[in-house]
Image 1 (cartoon, rainbow, N blue to C red):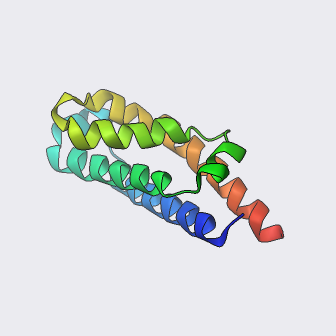
Image 2 (cartoon, rainbow, N blue to C red):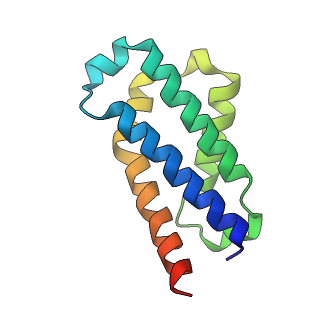
Length: 115
């Protein structure tokens, strides 16, 4: 793996950890009432999508177990259509899907560190 891609993966994991901190102890109903948290989390997800877009395309193809296209696509939707986002879906993504993505990224990082 290219060093640049590993650096980006680590940055994505860091950004995901920021989201995890923001939602720690938070209930969905509280999230849905807290516009500040919503905006902060969506902005962080936009950052993650932008980072994904900077990964080498061959790297993304080679490691297609990660939903790169969906992550990058969300960035576009969120950046250009913020007011159409359903915060219930954002909540589900941050609680359910994002931890799975982070697990896959950590596996890629660990595999690279073994070489």
